[in-house]
Length: 433
Image (cartoon, rainbow, N blue to C red; front, side, top):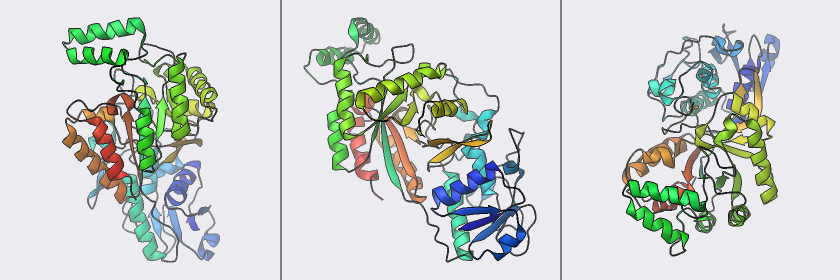
């Protein structure tokens, strides 16, 4: 066990030290404010306070972990060799930066508690993040810092059994609509046709009616193909289904259609099924609970995982709502219009609610890219190059490489990307330790 001496034990310090030593490095951590207890401890130990006690492993603490609420904390990003870092310590410290306070700042999404001008959907804009402003959006700096901490600790305490985490590829598939053309009803079909004609997209008109009358399969309905692929590559994939009612921003197939219901049940027999919570639930949390109940009753399984449709993740409100709805995992911590690590990590973490000053029982998983954000890059080569870059950095720190695709995107081989083949390519390339 690693023993931490500090002048004050707080919920913030307990949270972030447990995340680093227990969740990431697979060890145990204890805390003490008693110098005598710290001195007699025989295992690995470090002091986290303002003044060094002697010649122990010491990190000079920043005030952030001993404060309450939101304060105007100055963040000045500097360079730790080739890696961005902030909250500098001093020459006596084993590390040049207080990575625990800095990690708490990033994991809690501290900056998102301040007023900001949201985008058209009210989402926190990537341009206002310190990661974007300082050029480390595509770098899981927390995980890199922790690896450096591990190396220095093992030099001082070689008998300690802390270990680096292991890499895992975790693809997700969003299903905002199970079909691209079929089961949309007369009005939506005619409206879609008129839009295609107005845009002179005659190929889409042809494909629409060929799918409707059964000449060719609907490009969104490739679920049996997916399950075969996932079994072949021995990989766990979660499908997030939108099962809400139709609204301005939510356009699912009607839940009353038996074919849609059978499809979900069939997928649940082979892969994991979770909830893509509706955009409407952003302003009406009870809808999310109703949607979860609807899905559970259909598949006869507990639904514990959530992703927010259109990235409507508001902090900390959404996580409080997820707790109330009895979700335990959320996969929404990403940007809707940019690749990168929104919380600067590729490891799952429990969310800390600064308003309540407590850790919530919701584990957060961070997709670093989606098929929507990847489409913005251009053709197939640019997409696969970007995925390879992200994969390389995630694998180096033993993180979870989480990418969210849409069924309506990867169901087609058309276009400059060729998403169907690209998805298979990622299963082949990235699904290995």
